[in-house]
Image (cartoon, rainbow, N blue to C red; front, side, top):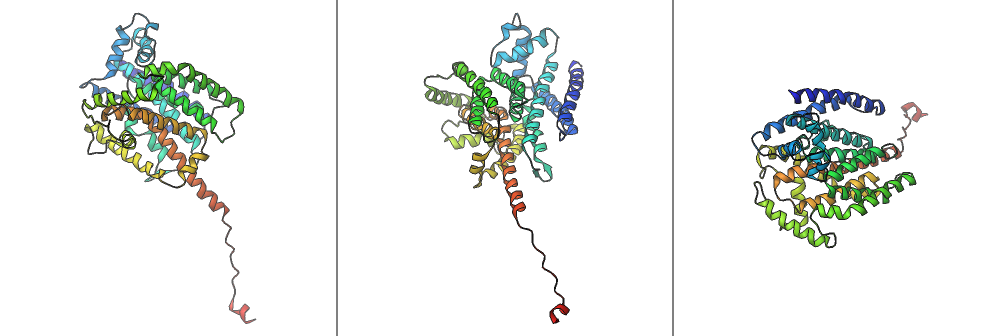
Length: 402
């Protein structure tokens, strides 16, 4: 009952915030985004039902927050402790039950979708569809993305952080606070992803073609650069890597984790795979024949959709597009590729791969949609440049005789 009451209260909090966005963004689809809220809550319920008969980290997070610390600040830290830190005041001061905490974190995940939706809409000029369904609408309703961002844990809150970061970068002039909060969330949940996000932002700013005021570039460049410099050793330690022998220690960690994870259910030993095959496994598997259970079947349909979109990359104009693309596309490319390489080398359990790749697939989808936009803009410009056909005068028989 507490969880049901909280869902209604959170919806009441959400509505005025969406109204503000609608007032600022005329294209904002209020009805769809409200439906997205209830769709996401449905997946929170599905996740809750599923974990009643299987182990879940969400239970451990709740009980650690409830009785694992003497005070709030004792829980503070990066990675797993940060989830305990966020949950602690709600559990101990407000008396939230496990079910209420599940709904609260699901709400955080929902806002990640809202921020990504706005980012997509602000940067995609043309309408793109599949079988009459708008691709942006289809993307924000992908089931696997909702399943792993609708529970008490890292998935929901880091998705919120990544969404806020992209939202801030999309309109840097007026959204610096959103960018800062998003990066802080990402750092506290997964410091290594923050490090890669910082590298992506720096790469985007250095190669940006759009007219961003120099002082804004310098502020973000300096802020991210200083943060990456001072947090580098902490990030490496968090990821169990040696900062002085980065590549060697990463290779050792990759081999060890691949073997260990392959021992688990739905394990596949990819330690001997070449890098392209590791990446393919991370991005596009399972594909029906190796699907681990009912969830794997659903994810296989989603992966088929990813494959269809990835096929659009094999075009002679993609390289040219990346060279001319905006900073946000280049940032997305660096984050997507770097995170994919890092995770594909350390994960070999399909269940874990399905969960972890939810962090990066929206960056891939953003790049592909921007590329489709680029190709469509070329076609539109060509049509505009074509000279209008001059209509020849009608010559009558009488005119010829005269």
